[in-house]
Amino acid sequence: MKETLRYLAGIAGPSGYGSKSTAEQVSQDCCSSVPSHLTAIITGATSGIGAETARVLAKRGVRIVIPARDLGKAAEVKDEIQRESPKAEVIILEIDLSSLASVNRFCSEFLALRLPLNILINNGGVFSQALEYSEDKIEMTFATNYLGHHFLTETLLDKMVETAAQTGIRGRIINVSSVIHSWVKRDGFCFNQLLNPKNYNGTRAYAQSKLANILHVKELARHLKARNARVSVNAVHPGIVKTGIIRAHKGFITDSVFFIASKLLKSTSQGASTTCYVALSPEVEGVSGKYFADCNESDCSNLANDESEARKLWKQTRLLIHRLLYQPTA
Image 1: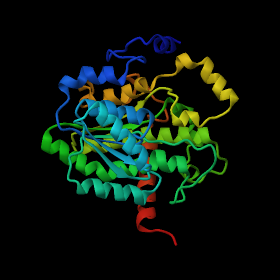
Image 2: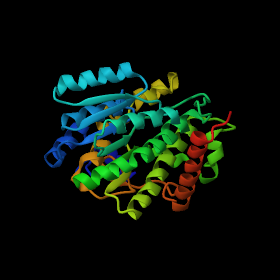
Image 3: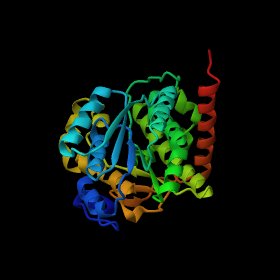
């Protein structure tokens, strides 16, 4: 109850920010300490929270790389950013996060540009009401929200480690998760069922993918610490924002709930604030393997904190990616 009241009132936490803080406010407060010539890749930046994150970071002088499936939408976002910030550098490259081959092509194209990589924001996500499969024959929500981002991160990780070593600026990886991850029960989190569910439920699939995003953060943080890499990785819950994913839940009941609960919803800028805080704030320097909400470190579920579960998911994921890429079935 106390946390709910804090959220509704927008009371600031230890960071000085709370649920009502905006990406503009957070990034403005950080801008004096933001190093110059940073480069950030932001998935899902053609709309919603991702587009707002791209706009605000570009306004603070960060070079933005937008991986996009819809290049037309990406071009519109680029134009909007550059109208507000004429000096902003925005690069668009094609990607389909649900396809490992497409993610691989994107990484090759980005690395060929020989740019540094300081910030990777795994923000893109889908919610599918009906059971769909990717070209790799993986359930679409899991393929897009988790598997594609896992592969993207692993493929670009050496570039981030190299950039941090050369510049002395710690790299930051951010997985955009959701509080809905806590809905997943231990006995319902089975790797094979995530790939090919027998009884599909869109909300459950989404929650499972967001739990996997946090488990990825936990295990990757352990690996980065073991290799003394100057790269941090954290997960964030942006809050409930009426973005494209939320609008996928259509119907009178949903619309009525949104009308009644409109005061509980965040604006897009409020939704992007935690991502921007973790990406830029000097207060988060060196913090890794944590979960943030409302611009403050927060608690995730017991399952999300389970080191053995994180390690198991990591191993299963690596084996699957290797099989799909290097041992394709006919």
